[in-house]
Length: 281
Length: 320
Image (cartoon, rainbow over all chains, first blue to last red; front, side, top):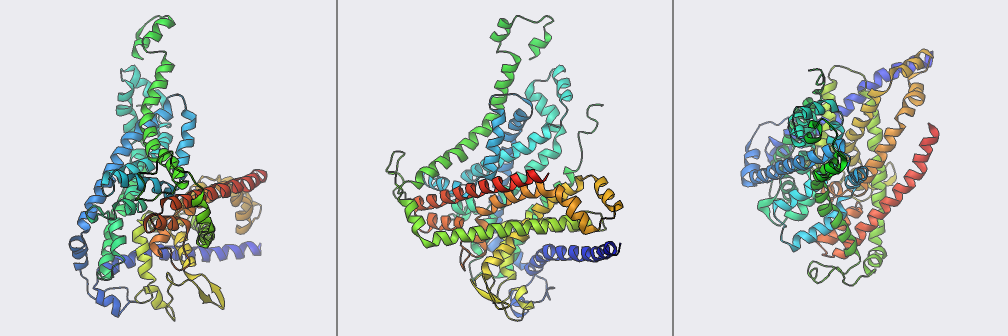
């Protein structure tokens, strides 16, 4: 019994220590990021160890957004992400419905394709696409990049949506069919409204991929500054000596904030169960 | 569909077939129509480029002469013999393996500890959980820049805590307690573990919360201590998810480009194969050699996966 008491005591002490440590290593860097973005570069050089800035300044944000062109980068990233999300959903909703509900030739093999694309190394794909886009002059255009993002996300989003569509009771759909719905209007009026949490999760996934992606943006857009995404812009400007680190930190905050907001806003939505009681009503 | 339902008597089969086939045939066609956009875009942007990458690996292709290198161009093994004879390739492959195995193991281990620590409710758990997920959802460029700044030898905050500054990201070798250690490689591995332990944490926590409480309670009644319960009750139920996580993280990390490229640019003894492929593709403009290295990397990945599945998946089945 003494060993049990010892271990319980030990873990009662260790657990808060571990939790505090985890909070420190994950929360602190981002706190530091924000704190660094609101001070002058001189202050960082003089007192690199200080956490709280002596004088707050938002000139860093003004500088990064206008002089460094982050407003344009934000616009590019927004166009790419929103277009990727819209087209990904447009393609994967019918695809997922087909895999979930309809028996067609090759339905079983489709899963294998999804898994293969999900695990497929991007670096192998980067080579032929780089060559192809150079040849047909799509390098520097956002459309080529959007195409690549869609292809990379669609298999995963089809899989995510399929899992959810399968939980929609078939009897609800049959009821809609008896009431005169065609297959497409059944999807539109019955399946999609019931699948809002899954659609949110899928859209979020596609958004995050498109917003955070770096390799293809680097390969396709690096030579045209006016088409840079925020990620690419930050990575390219991070090497230069002229731009102060605190200004670039403001750029990092600008890059990170949309993702964090989108993630935590939709995480709550995901937990709502919308199918509960659909059959009874 | 509505036509056949509306008719009171079952129509003869021949008549039905003329109206667009049986229900089952209609269903099959509808399914193929609905899935075809997915298939077309994966075919055009993933499958065909993959085949082309394999072709390029066997051709002497450069961006300048790419239009002359046709489908039936001269196929050669030169690229493979060239890249494999370079010592830089093998050292980058070793780096990739060390980086992948250590990064995978560390991120899963930390994820497991995190999941165990956050398993039971406590005040503030939601905030801690949110904080833990941020490294995983934040853009890689932002977090890599953040690490670079924090580890900077001149003004990085980490170096102000140390007795003498360490160039974490630009120093290939350093001495720690009298032992030679690859500083930059270890830093990159730490970054990998830090960024991806939330991924392991999410998976393991979901599994932990789905475990039946009865087993744990029965073990408590039988007088099992916390470590015994972890070893004999909880761990055996987690092996499957940990095995799956190992495969996923291994595959993703083995071909990862962003993290190492952004942190060190492949310098200071951290060059992994994917960064090498990128350099061959852009600075050296040697498409054929880049493709050959990428293919070799993918082949090694397949071999390692096969070995893993053969030994570990089999072992797991025996354990259950």
